Image (cartoon, rainbow, N blue to C red):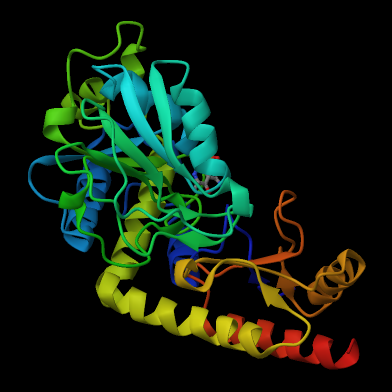
Length: 360
Ligand code: PMP
């Protein structure tokens, strides 16, 4: 069987060129006579891999000098705890809730201090991003937290909240490297890589150096202190070495594709094909508010759960994989990350059109 069009929300599609290169280097990486999976994380070849990965990521995102780039384990979920433990000097933080992931992070933060919800779109089943204009933040809050692209509900912040001197913390897991960002707008920006960047097992944290502190909450495990990992250049313990290597190959691929401006243009075009179809369809409806639509995750429904199930089953027969929506929203969700080719989106739209005509 050949490759399918994989619309999974994560782990998700990776660039074919990267998979081919990893396959070619599997038995013998760069004349080392072994796979990257088998080599010491203290070896010279691995030092080159992680240093090159960091340099390429810095170049792609334009990461300023005063930010650390950390390659960590524990997934984005571990950061829900690591962020308050490291940043809550005043034990106060403000959270904007725009979906399940920010809600989970908020719940976790409450274990460590006074986390306050300053805005929420839960009243609309998270189909939109709360208005961030005129929000009043806690003056001595340690940070303001957002999830910039909510994977399940398919929303993305159209603009960032203005938090003044309070550091903005953003979970960009499902939009990592899909478009340019201004890192200096954030105190900390992080994401699990298994959607847009690499295999599960790596989380990348980009954090401003004044937030890498000694005076973390006293019970913070040594391994979860940003300072531990920043001082050790992510090598305090054995890092997710093979995953970092694949991320590095994806960074090279992104550079060859023309960088993040070029990726954004591609992603706008791909998402446009799908949203344009949805907007004229009499059968399918996109569930997220237009102004807040994600470029990466596109949930849609027919309004009839039996028909949704039929769609998912028949799509599979047409080589369209993992299109079922998250259990909390139902319907369908097409995740169209960087590595999803335009042809994949076109194939999906063609299939939707056919399905609509057959089920009118
Ligand atoms: N944040 C977002 C936006 C996510 O989409 C996910 C995973 N789907 C997570 C956090 C949790 O990531 P992990 O499973 O790596 O802990």
